[in-house]
Length: 189
Image 1 (cartoon, one colour):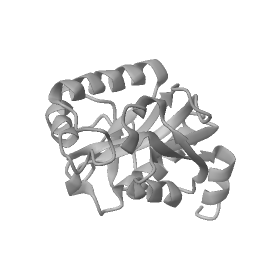
Image 2 (cartoon, one colour):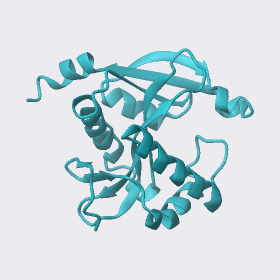
Image 3 (tube, helix red, strand yellow):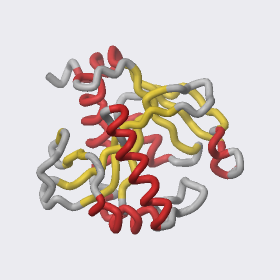
Image 4 (cartoon, one colour):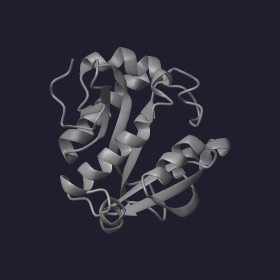
């Protein structure tokens, strides 16, 4: 089991990426069900490059889309976390929260639990003021997670990185500010 978690939620551990994640991450990214809302599954080489970019992002910014494990048994289930997005849109540059989980981790509330914990970590520990989340227009599961975390829909836009993929180009953007998050969570304490 990994002991080097940067932070945890009730059931999940969040950490930087290691070389040992590649096999499971590549398998997950090659799964057509996982990649349903993306233009195409990733090859092992593409996943290796993505992993390197995520590691570099962490070194540069102090956060990333964190490798995420189940605390119960240390099982890698995917990623939940943040990336600084600079592609050209009316919602960026911004800190984006995202997630991608393998099918065996679906249906347990892990994405929502992890996203809520990441918001807490982002606002309280990393000092973020605003966080967005983006998904393709037809990605209802991700949109529901955004709604469950208290994010507000800003609108739809054509994602510049997806302009060659008309079925995926139209995306939704949600946002939450630290003030709004604090209002949403103040009744829980």
